Amino acid sequence: MSLVRFENALFGALTIFLSGILSSDISGHIFEYGLASISVVFLGMGFFAVNDYFDFEIDRANCRTDRPIAQGKIKRKTALYVGVASLILSFLVSLGLNQIVSLLLIFNAVLFFAYSYYLKKIFLVKNIIMAYGFLSMILVGTLVSDYVIEALIFYYAIMGFIVGLAFEIMIDIRDMEGDREFGVQTLPLRTSSGFAASVFVILYVLVMILDPLPYFVNIDSLLYHDFFFLILIMIPVIFYIFISKSLLRDMSKSNVGRLRERTINVMQLGSLAYLFGYLL
Image (cartoon, rainbow, N blue to C red):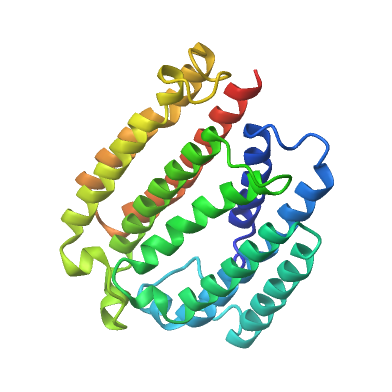
């Protein structure tokens, strides 16, 4: 479970359903959304396992206690078998979906494998690919039943990209030691941890502005001037403020590790705010 980061893979699957709800596409297509979610779970599990397979030396250098290969708890070959098997299962399940979604999921599997193998070493490419991962899951969720990308989904996908980009930059601050040793080019290594933290904060300030914007701008009629949605969405916005202040104050490996977990939880809160604001 630690190897495949099942909870993160499951969050990707829930994003599929969330996107289907926000686009009003899920009604009458529960089976297709179930298939898409299963495919995404296997895709996420495969990516995380393969990524750990290629990253075991870097993770060992970074003293990653959350990575079972680096801790010697799982053999590398086992991780590779689990990863490849999960990616194959994701591909097989995706064949039951429409052609666009199936091709998109297959493209993601190939891209994420290439990311784990080499692309992550290229400056900013690793950050952009991971941010794309956030965006693509949202788009997949609206394309399951039709080929229309609604305005709210497009807006939500853009926010997902920004959040993912900032999140990966923050993680790079924690992993500087191992990245430097193994030639992974990241923003904090090219500049400094302080500069990378500032970029993170700038991106999250943008998210703080964008998150409640559907209340003020008529992107979707169900969220426009919905005071309940505004109250809900301000909760993750306030947490983002505290996370940003904490990162600027303390960029140590231990603090970034704690902020990583908090940020994931706040992302989930933001998703729930949109969901409940839309439904209630």
